[in-house]
Length: 269
Length: 367
Image (cartoon, rainbow over all chains, first blue to last red; front, side):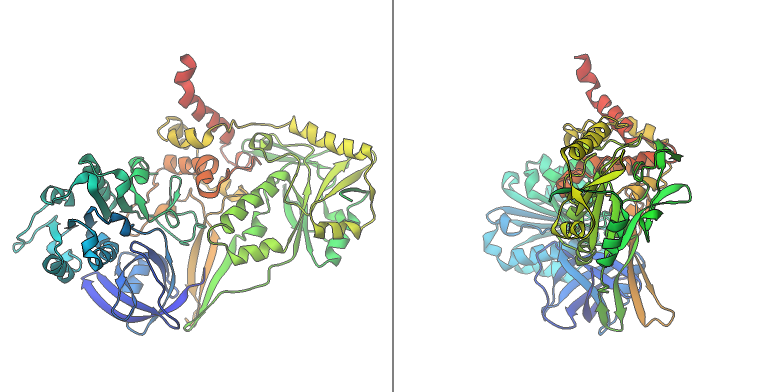
């Protein structure tokens, strides 16, 4: 439960309230991680929160994309290069990217949910030939809140990925679709029974997307969601992140829809 | 020498102190039996009994001089295995240190079979997939002396949970208090238990002593105030999530967290952060938390997941009796009845479970 000191190597603002921190241990190498895993990040004297790993930086750092919504995330978003924060982990289950070999792949992100899914897409394109069609569908509030726009453009251009974005509230310049991310499922091509889906975003968005995919014939066990609950420890001892039988820090955050669907359908579980 | 007989507890207390243990046992404090440090056996509550009912706890005078003539007190071993507050980490400048305070050597005298079962449950929580070294240190520094229950309380149901009333495992020593003449059988459960037993005056147990001790546990088992039908509970209880009974019990629940505080297995915690006035040192402190508190499921910028009392009660009861199995391979309930006794509105988990089960099986009865 003692955090390991990490140095902020770099800080890049993504959006008005969102930054990506590149973190590396003050001493020793960066740990390995799997797509979808998270760490507990501690802001000195303020507190500790779970943050999904959003990628590996160029010098091997751990990237974390953080939105300022509470006291700890605000403090972390204000961290400067050279500052020291605490890190524990990586913890939790991962997206089974390798298990999608030979299948069509649908990556569905809502808002900041694109952060952990970026590690999935990066693994997919690292071994592009192992997978069949790859579609990345992204829903975001406004064009201004879209995460990683340049990387999305790169994926679209260079790796034979079908990348589509929809917004809730368009501005005058927005040329694309408007509405929920589920609308984009109509616009992508995949063979449902030979498809694996990776989904992350607000819970209502994930349920809508997963229900839609399953209704089209994607097996629920191949629809993976990244679930979020309050966490204080990350190691199964604080009790906060329970979802029915699951301790989401150990049994999650990545849970397949066969397991999660019934649990998420119970109000206030 | 597996079972011996001693006539007085004083040599046992002295032997434990000599071995370097702080001896903690039942004492009468305010109007309840509480676990506190004792300096001699004379501090133990001779002649004290209790009556326990939903929302009701009263000490009584027994009139027979028995030392352990009461049932589960509000204290379990939890305060000693999982302190209500503990420092997790301390940061000075850029160094993060885990306080490696030596765990106090404490002998807990007078634990009941349910308390031992609760420690075994906590072991699974804290020594499971991510073992906690601080818990392990505390746990290994504890010397556990059980007392087999003679008079279960009105809210006890350990027999139906399979955890008592006789302590069968997990102790260093286990006592059974016998009358006429007043004496104790001492069952040895570990090597260090044997060392302590060897250090105090004792005689071998006679067949009469053993029969008398067996009789105490046999009679106690017939005097359970309550019972829970645990058959298949892991399946049917989570499935009963939309039972109307939840709204009924929620209308009586104050979300006061008493049940979770007295529960010997409830382990939920939260962390508080702070810095000194100068800002040089920052500290992380873990303290007991409760799934009944509204903030328990709060994410920044979002309403709590379990914002209704219904959802919070349902979470607690379902976790305790059913989903605990999924997470830790055991029931979270040991049948001590504390949550019933100490509920200010007298909510009785055994009654709620019976009503919930009745609700789910109502149709099959008609068929």
